[in-house]
Length: 432
Image 1 (cartoon, one colour):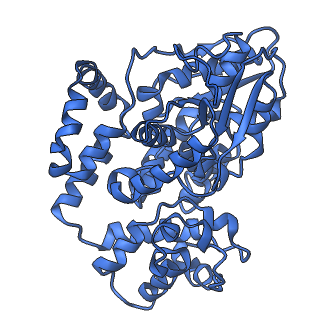
Image 2 (cartoon, one colour):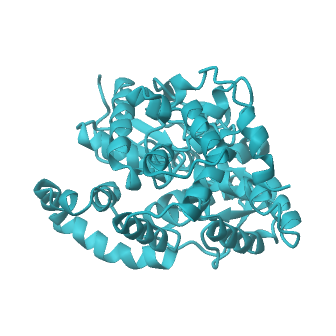
């Protein structure tokens, strides 16, 4: 049965109770009914009843982050995640976007899912950052005048250093407990290579042989969550082929892990691929999820630091992985975890959202940064590259001296006995 056959039931599941409203980021920001999940479901029903996709209707759909906080909070089990993905696919098929929108979307989807293109961008971008020209350009506001989306891309880019290349296999330390495949990702691999290196080391120190296929490509997360279904399916098929040889796939990016666990639905109507996709979804694990299932073996050494842990939406809401990262952090001696207020309100990254809706994303980023700063933590820990870029940018904007790291990097520092200096280099310990 196709998604369109399921649509009447999916829409009918919503009883318009309003439990979703306090968790919806755009409703929290603006208080507009049509920018809430139940409001958007009302618009979806109108479209299903024959109303064409008008510009204002599409704008309300575009403003949705797809964070799925509403799915977690809904007492009726409404599958809003399926509804918004189906709707976005309809928008891409039926709605003629402006030339400017097409240009920006074309740029994003011709760049970010392709590692070689991102890699080619690294050198010029690194030189641009080291020259100090980035600060001058931002002060001038010239990119904002050209395109707020282009300005957001430039502003969100993390400071780039050298990018170490991982081998195809990293051997387990001591007796081997498991053999795992590792997804390196696109943005993660090129903008946060240290996260991947730390992930491979942690897995190896916990007794895993780590297989890192060199020809792996994009998992299709950005395309899937933006309604580009055919593109997402092509990426998914390639990923299935790449990782069929391993029993477990470990993913350190929340958005990627969520997408790969959705392959069973994405390719359900393809007889040649549905079974293979289902098998891959079943063996995909987030890094924290896998490590807790495996159980600790390597010695944890002290890391005397206070951290604020951020729940990435596609980890907490889409995958239901909440306790596992906290369990891993709690197992590190002398590390203190502080919770962030409004944990279920998205930071504004949401895949490509901070590029296509930069003003709303900036509002949410500022809100998240203030909540992080209120914890008085020295380090923010997040498990998604988009969240790391979004919140780090907002923290800099507010002058908050809080470093950002991935859960894998904190574990790596503990297992290797490196303390806090690799996580918060050259800074004195906070006294407030």
